[in-house]
Length: 459
Ligand code: NAD
Image (cartoon, rainbow, N blue to C red):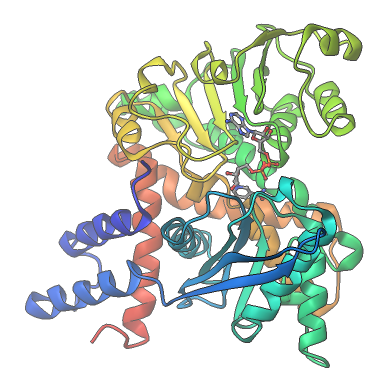
């Protein structure tokens, strides 16, 4: 199982407690008390809201569907986080994901807190009309706690632009005359959404890799040349040789990340494998990613799954089982499907020397420790997949200003924000030989703890 965000927050606070340079004015018993207060505040959510949405299905049957909205922390701004429609949604998982959002926003200096929502349904088993009713009911039940300055939901697994459009429309009806464009993000562009939101997470995922291996490595060339840090040299130097990438998941995040890698003129990439819920496709010389995206767009967002479909699409690849993507001979593995994909029971078979987490928590806590021990570089979810929430923030800003940015302005701002975070965390990671995950969490917790102290909330 993935280690809970609360446990990672506690570890980070323990490290900060022992770091005399952090809040040096608080000493002795006062320091212990202040850190207990931080632990209490950050490791529990502010509020957990639960409702049973009553809807009438197409056949006339009335059902009650469990739904959650968790508001973890709003120290840095309104609660922010997606709404997931999935049959396995549980309160504990939503609380965990809400805490991750608090930390992600703190890490990237996005002025939002952390929240998350969930509805316990398999959306594939509901008609569009039933889903519309569920979206309306979700907003009706939680309307008092949502809003552009209170709590701003976005899409997550099982939801997308359509659901956000429906939800914003319901919010607008319930609150006539009030600002509504910033009440939900991830809306369609025609309905106040931002250009570039759809590709933002995948672009950001690839950008963390490119920035590390190109921009940051170039800037550190002199430091690397003196050979004093073998770990940094092994992570950063790939000597211009072709970099083989394997991508698990070919949905919104995986396909955009794969396309960025395919098109990137700065690294000599070969996307040798991609996978989805059905298959892995492999080609040692690299796959034609644009052709695969075109195929998926025409075929229910799925990859070719047999020889006939491959032949029809003119794509050259070997078909393998869906898990095989994890174990191929690749330099970089991008995990962009689901939680808990690399675990203690399969981590030994993973060969890649670098892993980028496009999905949330795709590596279990135990597997993460084993990968660290093997010196596999992991770019964690909190850093790598923040592109979605960063562009959500830009969408919220555009809604407030009713001024809309061009796609290139959006991507420029996205890259600037992520680059600023990476400039802060990459040196600390490579110089101190702590995992990048630990460095990112500590950075985020430090920021939150500092603000809590300044605001007088710790005593
Ligand atoms: P998506 O539904 O568009 O795509 C998911 C992909 O994973 C699909 O290709 C699907 O076939 C594949 N998949 C499903 N089950 C699989 C399995 N058992 N093995 C291999 N592949 C499987 O979802 P997405 O928006 O691309 O999100 C992917 C992950 O990234 C999710 O965990 C999501 O929570 C996380 N995430 C998404 C965003 C975003 O902006 N979309 C932001 C942050 C995090």
